[in-house]
Length: 292
Image: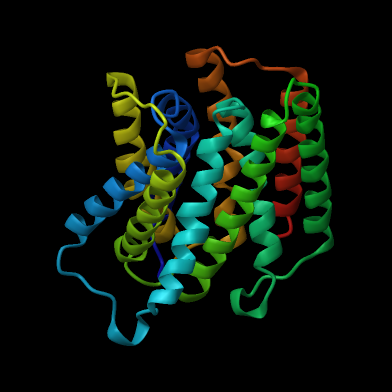
């Protein structure tokens, strides 16, 4: 495994936490102007095209190029499915709650990363962390069950599905692609995922109204450039230096940033259930982290 100066790793982790901590609010703003699947599709098509420009003539080594089927599965698990869930869900729940629910992602990663190929095993502290995390999720769901209609609860469940799908993609990349150029790792999944989202949007959101506003357009560009092209490239670069389960714990910081931004910028409610649920989820992550 290549060695990198500790300062570079700390800087990369700080940048990615700040970016991904703010993307939840940007998504919330974006879906106020555009249908969710179309907004997500545009985000990743722009990000993929930007990465294609940055990558230039660089290519993956011939012997290490995955087939089209692999790229399509990665595009579905890394982009199309998780972000369809997130964008739809954020129409009905706050950006802060979305970030806290998605914070279960490292627990899913840890469970999936137990095979010998990633060199990581499930231990009792990890299982205890999972139990704490599930208790936090149950507490968060109490608020959604008490709301009118089923959409808030459905949105919350979809965020958990998004976290699981993203964990599958992370383990796929770690096992096969993590040592390769991060720009090239991201390029195809983002382009393919964006095209899949746009195709589904055309089929299901053809009649949906949408508008272009300065606020929504800035949010879209921020998500495409920083939230996707920049952040994912940094993330996959970090995969070369940190164990997969430990790297995924950047999610430990992002919910706090998301909760603060959602409250300060959008006046999103900060309930006791949300605070206590977040503390339980983050405590579960902390417990699981001590096993590494």
